[in-house]
Picture 1 (tube, rainbow, N blue to C red):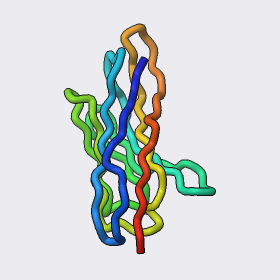
Picture 2: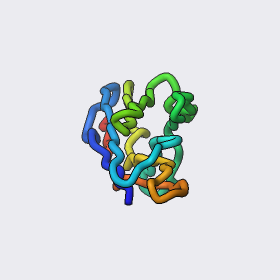
Picture 3: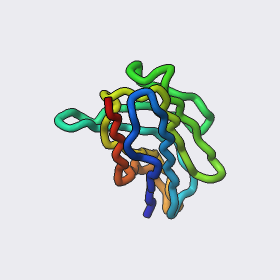
Length: 120
């Protein structure tokens, strides 16, 4: 099995910064795309940013220029640096990864989520 564990959420004032981190562990052969999604109350889960194993990124327009995704392939981690936070960024943030497991096959995994709350 594969586990994704997030950390770094919390409460911050508008204009502030937070950094989210996610570490993958378990029966991992390799990790393909890793990403961050978020879900606000009453809304659908949406992509925030994703990054391929080679480092190519895709970032939602709503956070472009404020959020930066990065990863460390050796440490099996993905991070999201969030600057200039706005109240509308308030959501539960989820780590996601496409993992090629040791027993074979590529599977999609989710972390348990971490709350980010931005006060005005």
